[in-house]
Length: 94
Image (tube, rainbow, N blue to C red):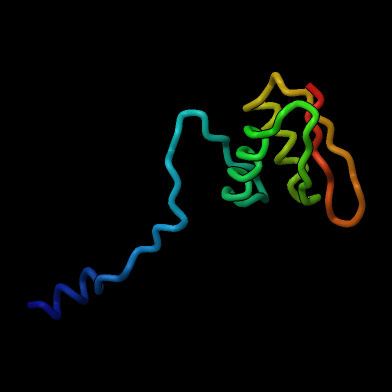
């Protein structure tokens, strides 16, 4: 009987809790071609960004930064400038 149950339901495996995050009403929507954990990182950076401050971002996340800023932080005035290599810099102007 136990062998049958193990075959049906599998064995008990440990669960990785490191990738879990709380679901909130103001979570950003997924963006095509960008992993959701990167979207959450960008939202966190934009949330903590003060006026006159900046942070570096990879070229592949440029679209994600602009989209999240437009949807979540519509009152922000941001500027994204290329600084060389594979990076751009996001500035909050107002």
